[in-house]
Length: 446
Image (tube, rainbow, N blue to C red; front, side, top):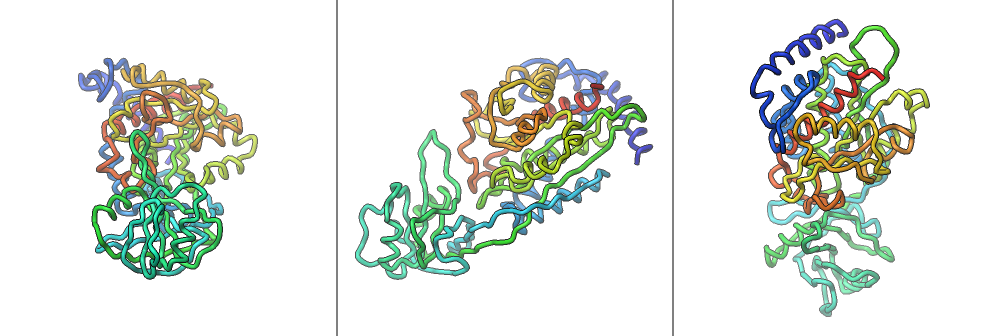
């Protein structure tokens, strides 16, 4: 493989000259605010990265597999798909297992549709219940008898005993929803917390499911709850050595994302988009010559508290941690939400480092300077454990112009789908920025 890598890499760089002579390579990039001024190393990346190819992987993850819950079979199916793709690209792939927390999940069958939701660990688990839905809104007024009914409660005040009250009145199951109004985002599925145990299923459903139940009028549902225990999640790690022969060890450059999603959400943008960005750049960069090794890492169980990336970092020796020149973490890199026009450089402390500096420089070369903001301080993604270990890292994401807190309304909901929440143009911009930046860092001598 080493000989083939060197030959193919040399051919790729030679092809950059041809790309440089191609007027299309000098044309303004999609969504750019200015004309590009590409460096030699940018051409083989920009000329080959294709959001169309990344979207082929995203359809598998978000549509064929769907919600990818940490430690469950759905996440394992995604793990196997990712590993197969990376092995086909001739990377050395390692699956890193680690324990994942218990999951409390449920399903609702409404006519021919089946929806996924959360379940309360304080309610009945491993059971099925059916009945007509009764919408009691916030539960301020309750009927005398709810025997056999599936009660829908929405925006119940904090501290209220409403769930306990409807169970005492005979409810067969309870559906709890939270409905927010603009500009707040929509709410997703969750596992409700109760002050005491009850003997019926209690589900936490997404806002879109509340809306659909209310639009359907009188309807009968069947609910089922499950407690998943003894779970194992996995990181998928793909390595490719530096291609320049001999010389000192110049370390490794990492491109990363998390491939799990929250219960009930197909996770097209969060973070299927970052995952397929990594897969496409693994294809584009696989044979390009570098002084540093390349490592693509796809994290499991991020949604439960950065569990996969934190486990990975905790296993690193000081020498291994010291070899990492930079970690480009990609989380939510393709939303189609209209106001999310800013591409944010998010380091934990808001400081500039090797990754943010390279992406900012790549944005200038590609003509995207007007769309890139930061670096500004922001955690809440898998760059955090690396920062805590003293490793240059940042998260990169499309969000609103007002700040990195301005996420799209469909974040963490069943509506985080390709059709409703993914822009191929923004995915292409993300590919070019991270591809050009990570390749520049990988081919630079320290």
